[in-house]
Image 1 (cartoon, chains in turn brown, purple):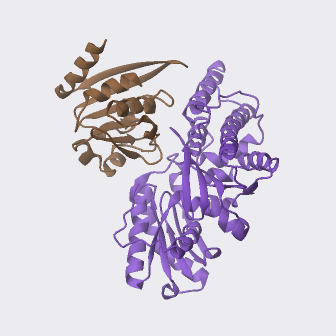
Image 2 (cartoon, helix red, strand yellow):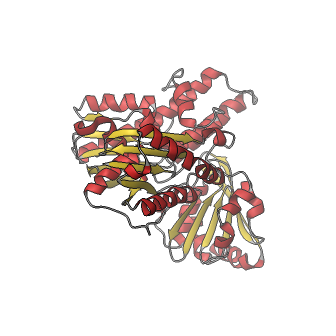
Image 3 (cartoon, chains in turn red, purple):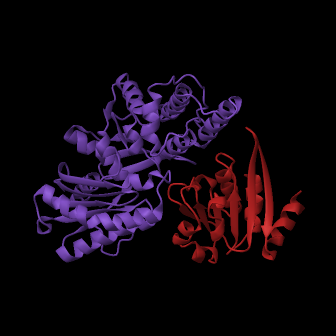
Length: 142
Length: 335
């Protein structure tokens, strides 16, 4: 939650975060944190597996995608993601491994690993120069 | 008064004709379950295309079954929210076109309120308000205080996964297929619900919200542990049945406990159940036992009315019509 909150504070309009991780690795929890960092009550952030896309109004709009039920990048494109990725909000994609081809060239890649029932390892990498600020911000935090 | 109902919020295309709110003249449902089977869930593109293809033939069939023509209709009702946006749009557009050409009123219906109305459709005038309403489905787990057919105050809802979503995800994990609810319900009958003590999440004391994400993860760990210990040999049926039964019991425990907690806060005389998971046999049995002991009336709809259908839309619309709650042709679908 708190890591997500820091990340949320560092991101702005048109940014894209792709979350990689298996069932139960904490993707939705991380989204709750990011949303809080952008001034959204984490309570309103729920699993988007059913509706595929949910929108929250914070400091900027947050588009919360969930590709759990999708088959590939084509399904993702049909949701109209291209317009949203370049829009006024922050886009977060859960189960990004299922739709990698539909992601933009530059994005923040966050991978979650289950180390043990109460421990997660989280790797953040940034594709593209626009996200250097995110890495710098996160490193400054430590 | 004859109202046409249209429901396309998720994977079911349904059209119904209901007379005066309670008398179902026709209720046709074209399910896309077969299409979705291989995907283990609802795929939006498939859902939209299939709605488009089946809506008009189903409309014709609904008219024939009811023994009427379009000109006999007094109003048209449609689910406008919540659901898959593309799927909702197809029903809403069709309803607007019908209302416009037939020059009859349009009524917008909230999907969850329609699910609560399923109990009214079954119990008719015997269903008394106020009551508590628990809607449990693939997309929702919500508890309402219902003061009348058309008024529902949200008391609590899931903070992460819906109960039905947990059923689907666990069924997929255990290799039981889609839809997960009936698959788990069925195999759980052979299992021991006390075999694995999965966690029950009640959140902070007094909370009427739900959380099923942790339970889903606990089943995952347990399953991986069992499979790992067997060197990746598939689990025997008995073990799968025990897992399914234990998981189901954890979900049912939470749903029943939260309902009883809500009853202590709001001492009403009845509890309505709705949504796809309302057809789960274990939930119906446990909840009716709990209510019986407290002299609270159970208003449970039959399974055919628990899943998405248009009769509950047209039925509820009658009550909205009586209250003058009509929609304009500018009404929009909302996810």
